[in-house]
Image (cartoon, rainbow, N blue to C red; front, side):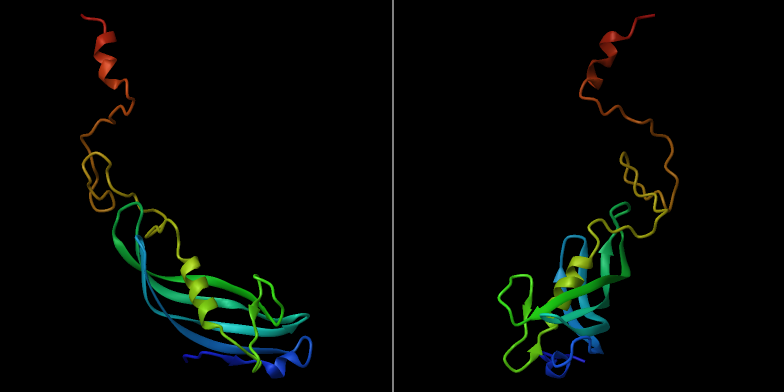
Length: 165
């Protein structure tokens, strides 16, 4: 269900009153290692608290990610926690409840979905990655025959200090 404003006037009348709502918010973002063109879905608990209303819950958004080890694209459901205070006070950490007693959950859910995307996606825990010498995908083929190259900037001088036989 798409929605712009959720009415919450009934919750604001009694401290501690709660209501759960199912949400589905379209998310579209393209980052270097993550692309989302789907809906973030979940259940949000709205609870009347001192000073306003607390929205909390968990959202799930399907994403296409790029593994940082093997560089392959893979699909994964990204899970994010949602926790936001809404109120009628002037505070940058508190989102507004409008004059009609409604709140906008869409922007908050979209923001949290993007923040939940992993910084370094990995397709699976045991991913071996690619060989840094020849680029072979080590998950598909073993890579043999390379000696570990000396990465020292002084490696070129190594032959100067080898005794001649």
